[in-house]
Every structure is written in structure tokens, then in C-alpha cells.
Length: 623
Image 1 (tube, rainbow, N blue to C red):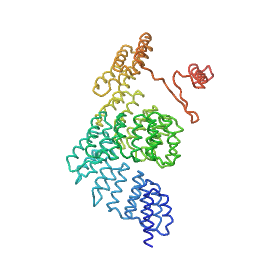
Image 2 (cartoon, rainbow, N blue to C red):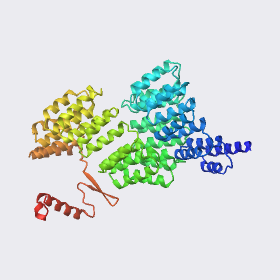
Image 3 (cartoon, one colour):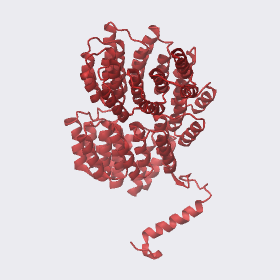
Image 4 (cartoon, helix red, strand yellow):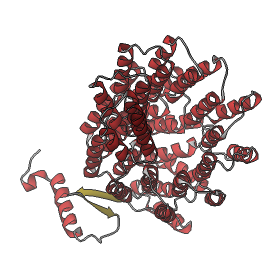
């Protein structure tokens, strides 16, 4: 009897490992008797295959039986909660761990910390760590990961320095954490420190370094790490090759991307995904699609790379269609898939499509996920449904700084300046620290609402209160705000004070030129416009703004000269474009084109609306 039970359990594990999970479950259901090992085998199989909801259901079934969950039951269930990033379920299992008296188990405590770390709750991870009677290297590294995952790198650094011994994985966690935050210099310094210690970098170390270097404009760091990677013998590892591909793709170095592709000896699923993603990043959509079709197997990562690539390259409708094809092919989307397709819906500004995706992600259980929720907030805001944006924001269980920023931009986009500023106060009160993007949203909101004094106070508080440096976008926002209020001289002074900040002078000059046009300041505007054209003769905006200024001021001869200079430089103005969604059909209109079959009717209606606006009483309507 016992021997037969062992054989069946072994068969369940073997079937699950070979991908035949349905057959494994069928065998499990047909077992006349089961022991805890059989339950654990099925539970672990679901968790390892990413079938987290099935693992949760099975765990609940186990609790209805007479079997008592053991250490392996809890670690498998906690692994599913960590994989699903389901903090509430993690709390529930934590409670059961205490009830059943397993809180002294090293493996369970490490699994609990893993759940809290992946769910962006480092404080509970630390509480578990502090209550542990016995710790090992995994305990330290899991706590370290919890802090780096939440972006608390200062605290993570303290934990790292306080470790009894820094092991290889702890170095990798720290380097990957700094890489994710975009702090390439700290990554390089840690790498040098690691080499001086007893630890040798592995493929994960070098992959994280390559990923960090892809965020820097200068390519020298990345090329140096690439050279070290090849010399150290890790050049043939899949992880290293994929990071090299991503590095050159992010640089836009198409030739280097194809050289890196040619150097790959054996292509596996991960390699195919990395190649497709890299080619998409270079903008070669046709080749990426051909590779997608040639790949022996396309998983959720492959499909997501295609959807994200289409959206990134401005082919949003193809991104949406690709998502539909993915569902038809029975590929289960993950949070990154939904994030990519929501971005496409945001750029299209097609509410119907966005609502369909929202319905789909609810069915898959992603409505509380911060990453997906952030995409929903952005999508509804850009599609004009601010109320739905607010509801999506409230549905996010664990709001991160991106969540608050998305809602703040949504209010700003719709002109709700008071609500945006109130939300900022709530954000600070909740303990979430603002970042550079937060202040861009606040300053843009103040600029469009004419809140000049409040905007200036917010600009000053960046450094004085939050210790954040003023970057180009922040200065340009304040310049734009001052220009809109008619303070052009003050705007020019501010721009000169921040000349050392990259691209501030050129970007702020465009804002000032636009303001001069609105205020009919021909002298200042002409000076700024001519300087812009001299510095960037191939940029259309300078010509257009200066021409508009001359036209608005009645200087037709000068306007004609600007347009002639534009023709001589072979600079073409990009025509204006707008689109509207009617009955789930998207119709676009391009300036200067009359190819649409309903153009005559559209012009007739526009003429009617214009007349109604100018003479409301004429058509029998009153304000």
C-alpha cells in the first residue's frame, strides 16, 4: 500500500515536470488514498509552474481534509503567494503558520520573507527576520532583496554591510538593485569592491551590470563590461548574451545587435525572446515579426515582447490585435502583457478597447496588481474617463510611487489642479516619497492652472525638503509656467541660471518663443527664434513658432522669409492629426487631406457649430 502510494506520487511529480500538469492532476484525483506527501507534491507542482490560483484552491481543499499541513505544505503555498504577489493571501498563510505552531521553522520564515519582499512590504519581512531564532545566508539575502525590491537601497546597504559574510548572491542582489534604480556608478563601485573580496562575479552579476549600463547615454561602461564578460569566460552564458543584446538594442546600435545575435551558438526559448525584443527595440518591426514566426515556440514572454514592441513603435492597433491573437492561442497573459497592451490602448485613446482589456485582466486576477493598476489609471485618463481612473487607483492594494504619479498626472491632464495638489499631500502623508516624475506632474499641473506662486514653492521644495536635484524637465516646466503668466523676463533669467543642466536652454527657449507669440512680444520672440534656428536648423518647431509669431504680429514679410528658410533647409512640418472613435471604429483626420468619404458632411457640421458658437440666438439656442 505504502509502496503504491510512493509510486503514484513519483508519477505525479514526473508528469508535472514534463509539463503534463493536467495528467498529473487527473492521477492525483484518482488516488483512492492520499498522504501529506501526495498533497505537497501536487501543490508544489502548481506553484513551480506558475499556476498560483490552482495552488491556492488545492491548499483550501487540503484544509478541509483531516491532514495537517506541514513545513513543505506551507513553503509551497507561500511560494505560490510570492509568485502571484498576493499579499493578502500571504497574510492569511502567515496566520495559519502561527496557529499550527510552525513560526520557528527556518524554511517557512524564509518563505514568509520572500512573500513580503515580492509584495513590496519590507517592514513585515524585517519583522519576521527579527523574530527568527535561527538565520542562514538565505535569510539575510531574502531580507536584502525585500529592501532592494522596494527601492530602499540605503537600508539595503546597511543590511548588506551588517551581514556576517557577504556571499555571491548578496553582491548580485545589491548590484541588481542599483541597476534597477538607474544608479550605474554605484553598480560599478560595488563590482570593483566585489572583485577585491573573495567573491567572483558570475553570469548574474555581469548581466545586472550590462543592464545598468544600458541606462547610461555613454556606452563606454557597457563596452568595458562586455569585454570583461568575454575575457572571464561568461560570454557564452544565456543570461550574459541576453543582457548584451539588450544593451546594444537600447543604444540603438543595430549592427552591434546583429553581431551579438550571430555570436549565439545555441538558441533556446530565452534566446529567441531576447533576440525578438532586441530587434523590436531597433525599430526593425518586419524582421522581429519574421523571427516571431520562425521561433519554434512562442510563450508569454515572446508575445509580450511583440505587443510591447508594436506599442513602442507607434503601431498600437497591431499591439491590440497581437494581444487578441495571444488569447486565441490559449497563452495566459501576465502583468507585463497587460501593462504593454494598456499602453497601446492609452496611446490610441480608444476607450472601448481599454475596457475590454480591463475586463480581461479582472478575469485573470490582476486588478489589484500595482503595475497593471498603474496602466489602468493612465489608460482611462488618456481616454477621457477620469472617474474610472480614480476607481482603478483605489483598487490598487499596494500603491507605489508610480501609482501616485499616474493618478497625479491624470488629474493634471483633466485640469483638476486642486485635486492633484490634495493627492500630493495624501501621498506624503502615506509615507511614499515623491520622485523626479512626481514634481514634473505637479509643475505641469500648476503651469496649466496658472498657479505660479504654488508652482514656485513646489519647485524650491524639491531640493530644500526632498533633496532632489532640478533636472531639465523641471526647469522647463517652471519656465513654461512663468511664460504663460506673462513673466517672460523672469523665465529668461531662470533659464540662464540653469544653463549647466543638459538641454535646458533649448527646451525652455521653445516655451518662451510660444509665450512671445501669445503676448505679441516681437522683439524678444524674434531674438529667441533666430537663436533656436541657428542652433538647430533641422528642427521644425523653431520655424513654426517664429512664423506664427510674425503672423500674429502682422509681420507678413518676415513670416514669409522664415517659411522660405524652412524650405531652403528642406525641413518639413509634420501635419496635424486627430482621431475619433465611433462604434469601436477609429477614424483619423490629417491636416490638408480631404480623402475621407464624409469630409463634406464634417465640414458642414463644423460650419454649423462655428455659427452657433458665434451667434447662439440665430439658431434658436440660448446660453
